Length: 235
Image 1 (cartoon, one colour):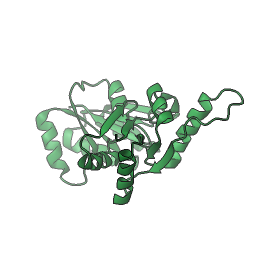
Image 2 (image 1 turned 45 degrees about the horizontal axis):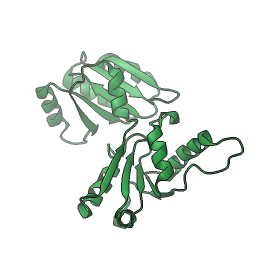
Image 3 (image 1 turned 180 degrees about the horizontal axis):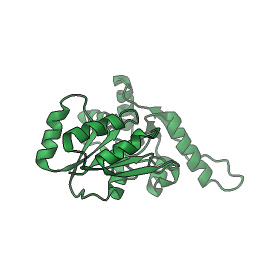
């Protein structure tokens, strides 16, 4: 019998946002597939410290860490597939949030299923920057489009489609590009369109911006912007 692949959401900032179910899975699997093993080691160290009793030096998990990122090749994918075929249980985690969303994990899952369509894949839900932002933006997002990162080409065609469908949309953005992106959105959708921006969600310097595109753009242009950013545009 082949093993189970768990898709485990991890905190997007505050490590205390990890779920109890995620902790249980990370304790019990044989291998943890990590986008950046250094980041995952910090999470495991935090969980280990939280779980220990006084004078208890036992590690929270004995799982071995495997690196898997956007530059990983066929050999690493095959290695992971063989572990599963050997009956080992694996957990896939990303640096922050839910794997497979603007993340190389989706390519790995597609590869594994192409070789073993009946592979048992179990999602372990938790933190996600996009749903966290949607929950506090205050816009009508009963329906929305998630764009990942904005495409470098054919943006006008995409924006025309969004305007025609009259649907709000969200995307991830770099702090170095966010002001330019707002300027572009202002030209396309008008300065009075409302926008919401979440920066450094759940972290110490979490900041939320909400208002007309022109006003938010002016505010951000006066600040030194760092950290990960989610943008939501109300249509």
